[in-house]
Length: 171
Image 1 (cartoon, rainbow, N blue to C red):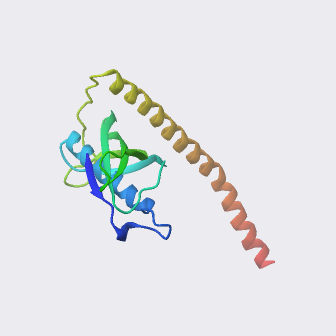
Image 2 (image 1 turned 180 degrees about the horizontal axis):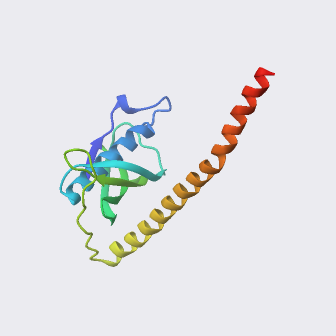
Image 3 (image 1 turned 90 degrees about the horizontal axis):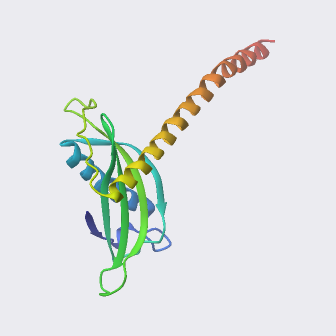
């Protein structure tokens, strides 16, 4: 968990905190959790499903909670939940303001992927989060393969179009 009081330098023209500020905060806490789980440096490889649910305002005390949900050979998924509460209003219920899932890759001192320790699933909630993370992973991989296939199919067409333009320009 990380906490931060949002100040006036972090707001947009609407008087709410920039989404990018919240995203950086999410990346910071997720990176700390990924590094701790993997026993060393880990870098952000992807951010999935960043959802902004409620605005964050100047003076809000913001808390980001992160947990490793899934682990592969060198990568891991970290889920983050962000809540906010006014710093000066005791007893005000915290608001769930954002959620995200990030993928990190553990790296060695040369920046190369390194092995990640296995994840120990202790509770039913841990097992549910792990199962959901596997679904997200399969969707990421399927999307990547579909995009690569579409690009491979489009590449010959792009080459043909470029040659046609050259031929037409010379005519």
